[in-house]
Image (cartoon, rainbow, N blue to C red):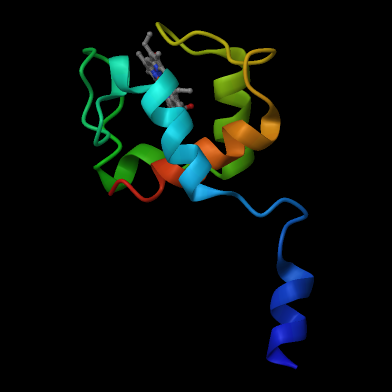
Amino acid sequence: MLAAAVFAAAPAHAADVQRGAELYRLHCTSCHGAGGRPVLPGAPDFTQPIALLKPDLRLLDALKAGRGAMPAYAGLLRDAELLDLVAHLRTLR
Ligand code: HEC
């Protein structure tokens, strides 16, 4: 019963944290640092709990559109990959 409820609540795409970590190393560490502590001034510190209060889909929009010094990732990375990245970011605290 509990299992059925959990499955019913699961999103269609289960994020792959491992793939998110690989994509992060490739695309994000130059500004955000390997462990989420920013290298570029003005980038958020992902080790701080307040950095990622927005829901996944809001962060997805920010990544697709770009923000400040951060480039837009729409067309470079697929939505599923960006959601894997967001899942990885949430492990950095
Ligand atoms: C060229 C530097 C740079 C790169 C590369 C970069 N970022 Fe950023 N990122 C920033 C900066 C600067 C901000 C803060 C922008 C602002 O608020 O003005 C930011 C903000 C963010 C935010 C917060 C968005 C929000 O709406 O709160 C997330 C999440 C994020 N980056 C994730 C990533 C991920 C994942 C990657 C790799 C795919 C990445 N960034 C690559 C510089 C970068």
